[in-house]
Image (cartoon, rainbow, N blue to C red; front, side, top):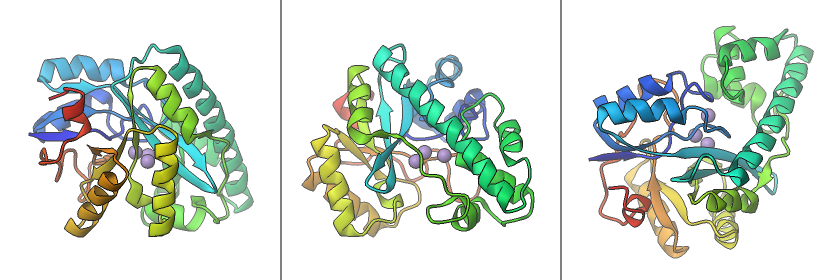
Amino acid sequence: MKIDLHCHTRASDGTLTPTELVQRAALQQVAILAITDHDTTDGLAEARSEADRQGIQLVNGVEISTRWHSFEIHVVGLGFDPESDALSTLLAQQQASREARARAIGDKLAKRGIEDAYARAKALCGTGTLGRGHFARLLVEQGLVRHTQAAFDKYLGKGQSAYVATPWCTIAEAVAAIHRAGGVSVLAHPGKYSLSNKWLRKLLGSFVEADGMAMEALGCQQSPDQRRFLLSLAEEHQLLISAGSDFHQPGRWIELGRGLQRPEQTGVWHHFGWT
Ligand code: MN
Ligand code: MN
Ligand code: MN
């Protein structure tokens, strides 16, 4: 049985509709799935009807961007009530910050001679949540970079010419809103922030201090060493473990449920009876 508690649809910067994503998860034999779009729960209702058809257990999910020191840290919420006022209020603020950031990125790209980036990213994104991933895809489509990671390395990432610092909520605010909505707070992809081990431990300390409950230790693109390291950090900080691919679009490396067979260790799914 595979478990994937981190992935994206067109409701944010993924390329599949919620229905297509759930169908793909079923083909990959994912039994427990959480869709965690950036700062929005808009894809969940559609996903739920397809999950019921496919016999997949769908856990409500969201991925919230937060600021911590000078870093953008992502906190995943799982198993919450999407109708909760505390959570919807926070997500509405995050959406406003996103919109302002997207306009500022558009202005910065215009200074680099890339015209109408905001309008074109918005068109790519459709009715979903506009993010840097849409700008990255645009830059790839324009032939300015070869792949989306290069768009971050060259334009959109921290320290680059189109980087915009965004006034995201704090880790503690994200965790509190998730908990008030009855959900579980999970530190997303701790290995992806390019932090030294010292800073990574500092981040885990802050997350625990903010009442955070779990961390992603199982991903689909990690070496056995990386996985062991993250599992040991979870144990050290007494955090539950979570598992997710962070799938955005069909491709060679990242696949729903890949490498995410139910592990021996107790995970959030076990703790909350999602099995
Ligand atoms: Mn994304
Ligand atoms: Mn993330
Ligand atoms: Mn993600």
